[in-house]
Image 1 (tube, rainbow, N blue to C red):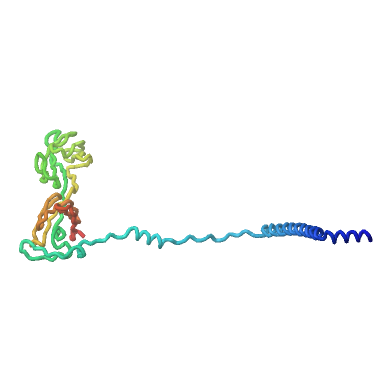
Image 2: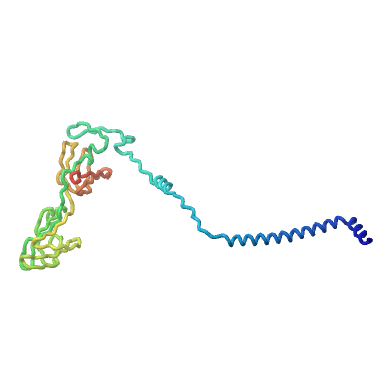
Length: 274
């Protein structure tokens, strides 16, 4: 009994320490319990992960930016503004005197006068041709040359047909071709020619060589009472009103003019060829 009384007196004297000891014991027990609970939950999570079945999922579809790209391309390649005729924002309508009657022409489109008003009447091809004529001795041969697209040289006008004489492995007097080879019989000769540009071609008694090397054009100018310009070639100059125009190109379908004053190009179409 005395022991219990001593314990009771100690507890009464040191109850704060006893309370702290109890609290520590409770805290240790709680820590142990939480640690066990943690391990238990961790084991449950591992088991859950192992039981999950892996499955494929659809990826995120790509964003359609075609419309945005189209808008961007349109913005970076904006069409050029054209203020030339027939737009009159910076081009007031002009009235020009027509030659030779002196009547006035209203210039609305810019094609009422000048090269734009020119009409193509006819386009004629200009040929380069070589044909065999005859034998001129035992080793010499006569050929006929036609270069309609050429102008002149130091010997004669090349636009007309002329005859030359040449032997094997010799160049003709106009320096148009070399005669490289002769085959066949006197009644059916075959020749291999090397042209001045390096090309080779065959010519026979009944088979001349021919190719188109340019064009000439017949033109008509309605603003001046249908004035005619026959047989014009590249490089020719035409006087239309107060301006000079140079023909810089001729094809079967069109003619290109260049104004001498400012080099402005104008192309007219051959409606008859369409």
